[in-house]
Amino acid sequence: MQTYDFIIVGSGSAGSVLAERLSATGRFSVLVLEAGGSDRRFYVQMPLGYGKTFFDPAVNWNYKTEPDPGLAGNVDHWPRGKLLGGSSSINAMVWIRGAREDFDAWAAAGNPGWGFDDLLPAFKALEDNQAGADQWRGVGGPLHITDCSTSVHPLTKRYLAAANQAGLPFNPDFNGASQEGVGIYQITTKNGRRMSAARAFLRPAMKRKNVRVEINALATRILFEGKRAVCIEYLQNGETKTARAGREVILSGGSVNSPQLLQLSGVGPSALLGALGIPVVHASENVGANLQDHVGINYTYRGRLPTLNQILRPWWGKLMVGMQYMLMRSGPLSLSMNNAGGFFRTDPAISRPNMQLYFQAFSTVIPKSGERPILTPDPWPGFSIGLSNCRPSSRGEIMIRSANPHDYPKIVANAFSTEADVAEMLAAVKFIRKIAAMPAMAEIIEEEVLPGPSITSDADLIQDFRKRSGTVYHPVSTCRMGTDAARAVVDPRLTVHGLAGLRVIDASIFPDNITGNTNAASIVTGWKGAELVLEDQK
Image (tube, rainbow, N blue to C red; front, side, top):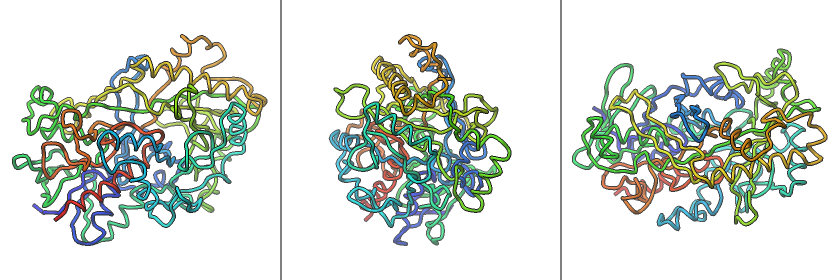
């Protein structure tokens, strides 16, 4: 059995950062265990290739929720990255930090050091923003962020103009002074290639002699001596192996895998563990509880002007953009499908935005089996305006089904399970139609395809968004942070309450969800978490 100072379970957005930061001085040895394989795949590195990875079991856990009453009984598809870089290797790459108020609320709840002003220096230090440095943005850091303002589809300008006509201001930087308004999304790419956490942080760390990364290594159990985590048991190539942590075991498996591994190891709700025959090491009722997620929907339109559909669907168009990408690392394949978006309030009385917008200059109404049809859009000029809620009040849970680590956990999302979430979504979808009715958009719209002009009453609109909504892939809070061990899993230093030598550092520790895409906040959690770990070493 080999011993390392730190064992990091998971090489995703937080785990990759941890590996780089903890190994940088050369003082500590680091082992990273990744259940998936390499990120060196064409469709991983090509930004728009995430349409191909959306269902690919080679790089994706492909989780499914339980049938959800809030989504008309549908079973929701939950892609999660199963490769170096984790979900940062298969996501839509939009770089949104979250609102100042989100992090200030974390600190106000008793988590010192997690306020916005505490985290801003970390955000700036890790960024290399193409838009340049200012009081909000950083340059020179390991993670390159692309300014897409000159490369988005021309139809994007009409979306921005229509949103302005509907009352939303133009916002040049959602990571700046405020989030409200509409604008072009910044994305995590560099020179036309995806800038995952693996590319930015893990691969530089892998060049160091004090870092070892094991792929296809499924962590199955944390081993304890009394209340101290000392080893990780894992499966690799059909063989059970064990590695020892001289200092700490750090779980960075994300909001699904971190609570799953804790529960498999005897840390979780006592009744659940007892029913499955798992000896209780430490009873913690909140492991896997408090699940929060953003839920979204698209409204899709047939247009009178060409969209990306006319380029990405025909063979000659695929050939053209393929050549453009291979030779120049530019064009549609080098971007996210979300060219633009924004944030708005469903009620002027609300102090800050509670909804996020997305604009896509193509449409995928006609499904294609086995892949997200990003690279095979509809055969007519279509585009979509989408949205998702930012801080829903609905809560779910993620709990193991058995003591077998190969069995996927039971994901109960409970989407739209509160009246408040339903009411704000109803107001939000009406606002999409308001944007589409503005002159800049209305003059180029042939018809609304989804949900269609027959859906007008509140009851029908609610029925429609229950039927067609789904996750936008931002699950958090299943190992939430807080000072009260009766309500939280980890303390503000990310140590698991009641145990020693064990931390959770990933999006599962968020006390509450943030306003926007969660990858940036996951990465800064890894950065901040590494600072805490290093501070605590004697």
